[in-house]
Length: 65
Image 1 (cartoon, one colour):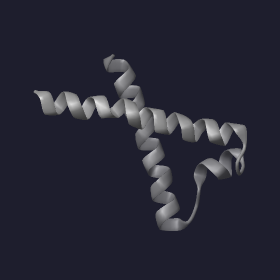
Image 2 (cartoon, helix red, strand yellow):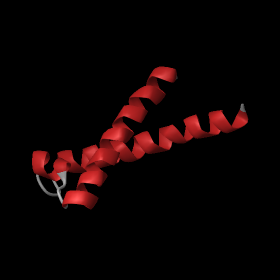
Image 3 (cartoon, one colour):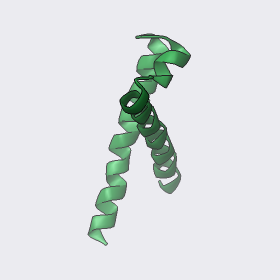
Image 4 (cartoon, helix red, strand yellow):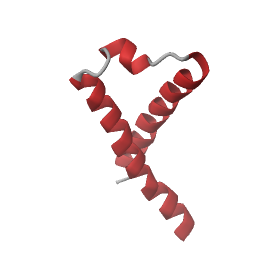
């Protein structure tokens, strides 16, 4: 499970960098690489969202200890 959480954390960080680029420079790297509203773009966004939900496990594990 630790490997899954670390992988999810890396994906979440990549998503955060993309959101940072959108906020700071109005540049969406995912849309630039894969196109606007394509299946691949939707997959990447979904993957980042799922990774964020997996990272909730890290938060709750830390609180329990």
